[in-house]
Length: 578
Image 1 (cartoon, helix red, strand yellow):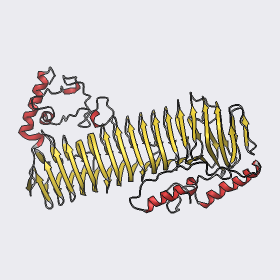
Image 2: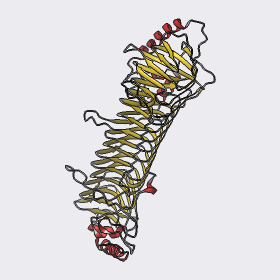
Image 3: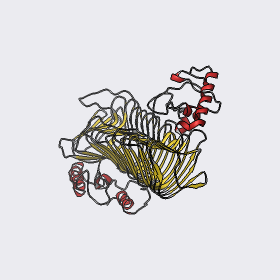
């Protein structure tokens, strides 16, 4: 078994195992010293590639122990002892290999096998066009530099699967330097472009740059199991139509739009850094019959995005990954907040004699605010910048650090958290779900405008600390068919509220506390419109234990109303219209 796969297997089998580390070896361990003819090597290697693949079973969804779902053992195999050498040289590429043709600076491979490439091609291209539907090919990059001004440096037209292996200690680069010019029916738009499955492994370095398109594109699966990659592109860094899977390696992705784009994103291991102008991971699909998924089951993922760091129209599942996110410049870049439901709440926000905003979205002395009546927050540019956004989110374990301009963790449906460590700074909600937030474990430190918000909030276990400016936990009607419910059954919960018309526990429906340890430091500890009770656990309000709920009057009561008046007065004094 390949050493990288052995390490990954150990990480899966040993709880709390460290992230896989790829160690380079001196020299080229797989270089050929045999004195056989190129023709003999081609026959031998064609058989070898087939044997490697058959020994690992199916290419995808293999049940081999220790191999991640969607990968095969062959994806981790970096050996190339019988590889056929091909020396690249601008205007002078030479080879005796059968199934390899040279036309100027275009080198075309038409026979399955394993080939080791070295040298440079300026204005050149590697083309892989295998005749058989089950033909596989491995190219080993050993000091390869290819530039092309109008197309891909590596272009896979047809193959069952292509393996790109970086030789140990080697440095390689592929660059598309200008706009793409199409030469056939395929819309080639990446510095490395493949119509079929593409696997990257090895122990060397590969730099990929694209001035007017994507970095690496596969119209089927795109997988990375080892090596070091520096990818910069005007558009997307990695794009895989059916899947992008990462199970090892060190990746630095810099993109004008998205870092990783696929309907199925799976990260099991690796050290990944993503800096992008749009989404860090974009998991979107227009086909209603396809369920997009993002699986983060290991490795280290660092994302810095102008928009949502992770965006999915399907499910995001996290178990064991270390995730570090800054989206939209972080929480310090958050928009101003307002709540237009009650004058008292408006006063609680501005209040205390401060100048208030104008009603109706006009500019006030405090600056321009773009009012959004669908929510109690608004961004000045109308754009949301969330940490993780999906239809549904499940977290079983992992270390998750998020600093977001808008919501840190946001789901249109449900958020289920069973474990993990969370450090959250959010310009709006720390954790938000339109339907349900259910927490059954984990450690949370949340600094946000609102700590947790959903129609139904249920806390069964966990250690949760919330520092909030508006509501600590807010159960409010977001969808039809569900009633607002806030239920605390266990765990340790500490909520520290800002001064003013702010509620520690706020529900448009009911509040029930049946267990756990609850500590509320707030002027308004409870605010609910339906029933409520304490039937278990211990509850402290500002240091004093309470055994019954007492309700805050709507809108902050007289105090909120008075503060609202001050806010209105401030608005009029500043020349605002009321």
